[in-house]
Image 1 (spheres, one colour):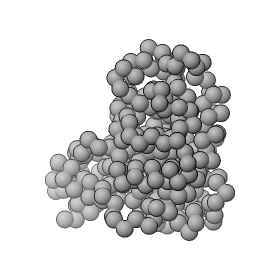
Image 2 (cartoon, rainbow, N blue to C red):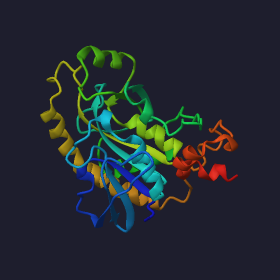
Image 3 (cartoon, rainbow, N blue to C red):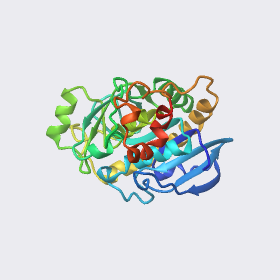
Image 4 (tube, rainbow, N blue to C red):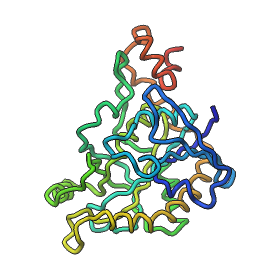
Amino acid sequence: MEQVNIGIIGGSGLYQMPELQNLRELTIETPFGSPSDAFIIGELEGVTVAFLPRHGRGHKLTPSELPFRANVYAMKLLGVEYILSVSAVGSLQEQYAPTDFVIPDQFFDRTRARAHESTFFGEGIVGHITFADPVCNELGDIIEASCREVGVTTHRGGTYLCMEGPAFSTKAESNVYRQRGMDIIGMTNLQEAKLAREAEIAYATLALVTDYDCWHEGHDDVTVDMVIEYLNKNVRNAQLVLKDAVKRVAAKETPNQYRDAIKNAIFTAPGLWPAETAAKLEAIVGKYARK
């Protein structure tokens, strides 16, 4: 299988950018089923990247239906060391205006139906990752530098509240989230971040603000048309940020700091691992079974 160092998870506009060359599709099957769609492999100024449409081409999967484990495991099979995740979000605070970019450094989980898609562990192999700092600070630095280079209004840090969806928040929910100090709200990135850490892949989110959720008295309730309008305005800037960020990641001299993230996280001794589970998780835990 072709090996790719940098993976990007996001929408279709990100793999239709004019600078992307030598496009080809790659279908990958995993022990956790099929990913959201075929991967788009291409080159950005000579750097090979793997794009995955998070919701499938045509936006066919709800957040609760996403095959998070298959998506991240497929990235691992490709050899991905760094995932740049691009996601549309709502703003929960005045300072994050529509079309701004946010690089969050924390997550808060409000999902309810994704326990089976939130970890690779189980079925006889128990692991407990360290997740106090859920994103890669080094990737955050790179994305921030790229945003500044492009000239996008950018906010570094903040908490991304991950809700279940697919409906947007009620006003009561939105105001409670604000009172609790949450900054932006989305439906996808927490599970990606957890699984990337378990897969020993560095992960960071580039969040594209599309609206003020529904708490802002000076704005109408969130509508699909409003979200799509602002998202379309964000797409070109996101493309330019990714183009610059990919070059910076490729030129990085330090290794992926999470390459041994689960070295001390697996509580079950290798001699007790069920053969079927060990085979299923080979791409992630195999190196520890051989020690």
